[in-house]
Structures are given as C-alpha cells and as structure tokens.
Length: 199
Length: 199
DNA sequence: TAAATTAGCGAACAGTTGTACGCTGAATAT
DNA sequence: ATATTCAGCGTACAACTGTTCGCTAATTTA
Image (cartoon, rainbow over all chains, first blue to last red; front, side, top):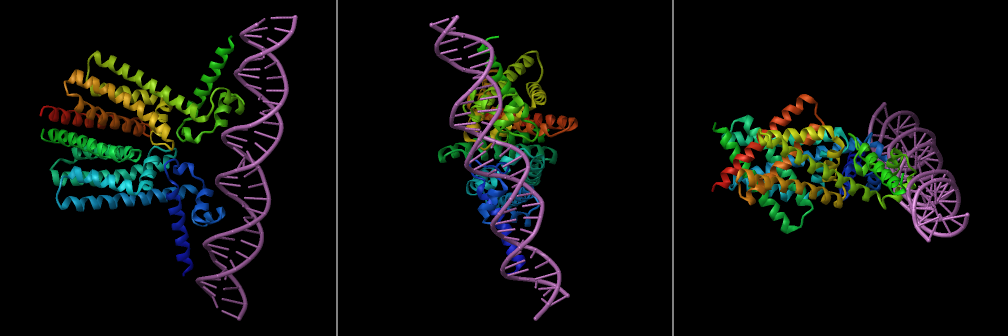
C-alpha cells in the first residue's frame, strides 16, 4: 500500500472515530483530541500529522454531514418521483435517515446552536443549501413564486429538523406521533403559502 | 444580616455568575465549577455548600429561564390587549427579550440540544409550557379547535425560537429581516390552520 | 545504492479539572 | 456565658487536557 493511501486511511479513521464518539451525551465540543486519538488508535501527537487543529477536524465533519444531507435529499426526490405525497415521503425519508445515522445528524443539531461561531455558520450554510434546493423544487412543481417558496421551505426545513431532534430522544411509538404531527404542520404551511401566493 | 440571608445571597451570586459566563462561546456544559466559583468570588470547595453538583446548578438555571419566559409571555399579552397584530407584537416582544437577556435565552437554546438528557427534558418542559399557553390563547381568541391550535402553536413557537437563535448572531439590519420573515411564516401557519379548522 | 522525506511514537511540560479533608471564625442556640 | 452549627477556605491529589521536542523506521526520491 502507498504511503499516501495509508495516510488517507488513517485520516478517515480519525474522522470515523470522531463521529463514533458523538453519542447521546457527547458533542464535538466536549470530546478531546486525546479521546479521538485513542479511538483512532494513534498517539495524540500523531493527530497533528492530519489536522492542524481540532477545529479543522470539526469543520471536516460538518462538511461530511452536509454531504450526507444532500444525498438524503436526492434519495427523497427519487422516491417522490415514483409517486406519493411529497410531505409524507420527505418526512419519512428524513426520519429514516437520522435514525440510521444518528451521529451525523447529532453533529449538525448540536453545532447548530453550539459554542463556536464558525461551526454555527458552517452548519447554517449546509441547512441553507438544503432549504434552497427545497425552494427550487417547490417553485418548480407546485407553482409557487420564489419569494414565498423560500419562506415556505425555510419554515418547513426548520420544523423537520426540530422533529428530528425530538425523534432522537423518543421511543418508537412517539416517533410515529412526531412524524404525523410535523406532517400536519407542514400541510398548514403549504396551504397558507398557497393562499398568500394566489393574492 | 442574617446567616440565612447571607447564604441565599451567595447562592444568588453563584447563579448570576453562571449566567454571566454563558457568553457567545461558552455553554453551561463547557463552564467548570471552578470558573463559576471564581466569578462568584468563593472558593471552589464552597460551591458544595449550595449545590450538591454542577448539574443541580444547571437545572436551577433552566428553572429561572423558564420563569423569565413566562413573564415574557405575560408582558406580550398585556401589549396585545392594548391593540395591535398578535403576531407582530409577539415576535417583537420576543426578540426584544432575547436581545436584552441574551444569556437566559442562550441557556435554553444550547441545552435544548445539549449533551445532557436531563437538561434537554427540562428545557423542553419549559417550552412546552409556553406552547400550551399560546394554544389556550389561540383557541380562546381566534376560535380554533384545540387539537389544531396545539399543532399551530407548537409550530409557531419553534419558528420563533429558531428566529431568536439567528437573531443572536445577526447585526441590527439582519434582525429586522429575520423578524419580518418569521412574521410571514407565522401568517402562513395561521392561515393554514384556519383553513383546516373550517373543514 | 544513498539520501531525503515523513507518519507515527514516547516522554515531558504546564495547565486545568472535580472533589475529599480538616480547619476557622462568626452567627446562632442553649 | 457556653456550646453548637456551618459558610467558607486552603491544601492536596489524581486525572485529564493540548502541545513541544526529538527520535525511529519505513517509504520515496535521486
């Protein structure tokens, strides 16, 4: 194996280790360089061969999470294309995702309101992407003018993220309730936006 | 001065010190017992005369924040009684509040998605209170049935909290934009809820 | 083949953390 | 006046943190 490849592999192991440490009661801000190194089975000092800083690792994690988010949206679109309610499928796909990738979502959730302005900005940028893609979709498919579609998608994404946060602390029964609640709320918004769009 | 009073005073100084440490880049989880003690001008060990744990202090802070939140709502209701748009006044009052008590709001915001399940639950309880009071108001004044009013108020509170979070990182110009955006979104929800209520 | 590069390591550092222990001195109770 | 309580303190400890330094051993380059 190449030396370059070897290095990349270690780098990836660091990233994965960091994600794996983000469990129920650890956020990126509360994990230490040494913890990550331990999990990745390298000496603490070797960490610096890959990242100049623990924050650089953090921003990398946010990037990877954003990537996962966009893949998620693509998946939702494919499912919608096969027919079915846009709202139902979107919410179900999203909840499915966060329940099978809890740590990716947790990172975004925690750092969204975290203690680092840089992280908050990075997360908001990723969510903004998500929101804009949804707005494009709404103007395109539902024939709602862009300014209103942006307000609509922004509200929808925020409610879905909030629902996701609740779902992570809930058991399976409650998740169903959360899902149907947020679906109703999205329909309110959808209907309200239609009313204002037709004026 | 009494010994009891003296103790209560010190206790309050600890609480205030903790709040004052919750600035832009410190959350309750990241501040230490010793930091709090330093700020309150007591020895680290004296902390234990007032709280058995740093978490007990945290829950106290959440309680105090919840109290402030309910006072805020009362204030908003008084203003609304004097006439004016419910949505406009509510949003303005809320934003006013968080901009003049940033640390109280920051605590709720951060611990809402923080690393302690107990804190998350405590914050959600406070927000739930807020939501239920709003739902009562909506059924009462706007003649919308309770189940729908609850969905509506839940969505509204979440969007307003999100807007508050954004406002804390924004400059004065952007705050105006944020305010008018969330007001539009609340009107979408209001309108949508009306439509569904009349079915 | 010889020289240069470099991923990873171990030891050491100064700084921080939470908390146990026993003491003090002043307020309170008897 | 004497005894009790107890808020607050200082010392101490073990555990952890991020980061510097120089070394090694293997790969890559010349």
